Length: 165
Image (cartoon, rainbow, N blue to C red):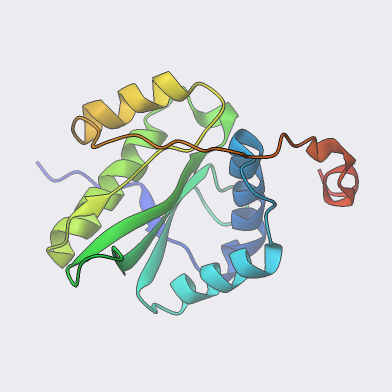
């Protein structure tokens, strides 16, 4: 039986919603200030097929979640991998298989390219549940991610968050 993947390749018409998804994901980790210009540049790179792809769930205008995959190398190796930059499902769509579908899209892309898929979680909300999901869909984690000397941020004072969200 053939199963149809509900994740589609995102394109330029999806850019406004993908920017909103990136802001929402940022709200869950708040490590560094989000630079809209840099995010837009990376989305354009994926839209143009320059070593990256964005998979989206839902129709343009109704994107429920997305995953960004980048063909990349670790600093210490000349081997290529498929690196997930973000994987995010809007909260109102999380009681579905959407996150699993996005991960499956990443796995399918990695298989088609013959590259290892590297995914991670940077979050301050429901982190353990997300780790459990990734463990079930991928494998046991390799290592962990820590931060030192990160400034505590209150982003409610930023103009972006007062006027646009």
